Image 1 (cartoon, rainbow, N blue to C red):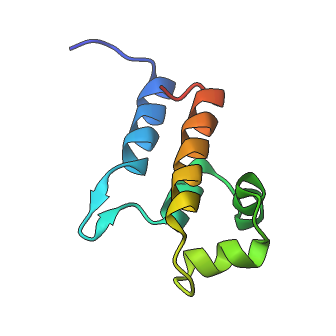
Image 2 (image 1 turned 60 degrees about the horizontal axis):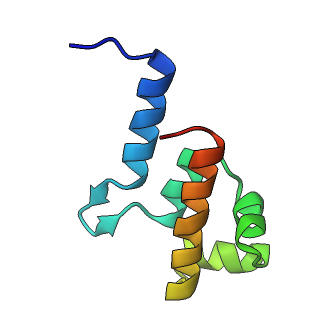
Length: 86
């Protein structure tokens, strides 16, 4: 067993949790956002959409369009890179 830096172990767990499958598929937008420590306003800003649009996506009022979902996935990877979550 190799000793890993406790911070990296924690970050590894967070990254893995972002993509862990739930019974209905991968984590929800809200779960992903919270794991990254973003507020709804910050997530909306990252996506370039109004705050209310983000709320509607999270609450299931509207379904996130596929192109926006891809854009969110892209930004997830960028945020993880910026925070050195490999």
